[in-house]
Length: 165
Image (cartoon, rainbow, N blue to C red; front, side):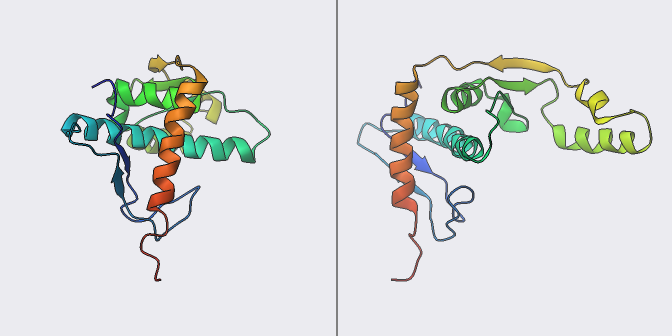
């Protein structure tokens, strides 16, 4: 599926965290038409992850004098090429997938090794990291910004949903 058919999903199932900080937000699906099916909904779910990453990278960029140069993704979802390409497009930086997707256990083990002098420094650990794939932004900024505007409109609709009237 190359597009979401106009469907947008906001997964605010327990509210929205940073940068929105709205515990009263609730998950919504917008833009459903009779032509929308499970493929469009699945695509909208994947896009929602990329939009949430952009929400954070935009907030980080606004709060820091240092420009964001790249992202590294890990975990099970990082196996999905589509997701990492969407993250690269929305964040406008390269997104790298490591050779080892499950970095939590690896990180705990390497930090334990650092504490036991298996490695001499954090830089030694950093030097161990290897990319399996790198996803570069390719689409025009105008296009990625246009779909992000649709996301922010949907987020606005999801916010404050559970607040008492």
